[in-house]
Length: 79
Image 1 (cartoon, helix red, strand yellow):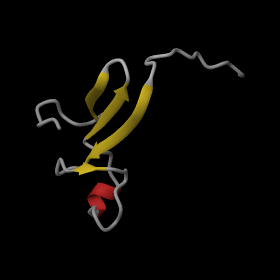
Image 2 (cartoon, rainbow, N blue to C red):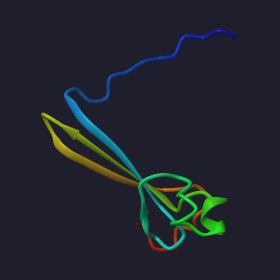
Image 3 (tube, rainbow, N blue to C red):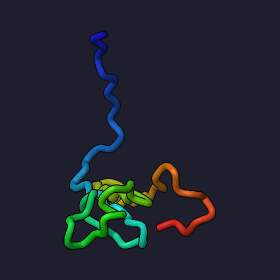
């Protein structure tokens, strides 16, 4: 099935976008999976605990959102 994607503009004037990931120790990582030097075997084979999205826009300034990754209990601390 060849379907065309639906495109919708969410923000105008985006100047930058960055992603960060939270490992099982709630330490922020710039990449996922983290490098072998900075992560344990458990970290490199698991999903991040959370994902932070930061968008810099001309009109709204900085928009920062942190999302809990699937499979992490709601009762645990969030990033």
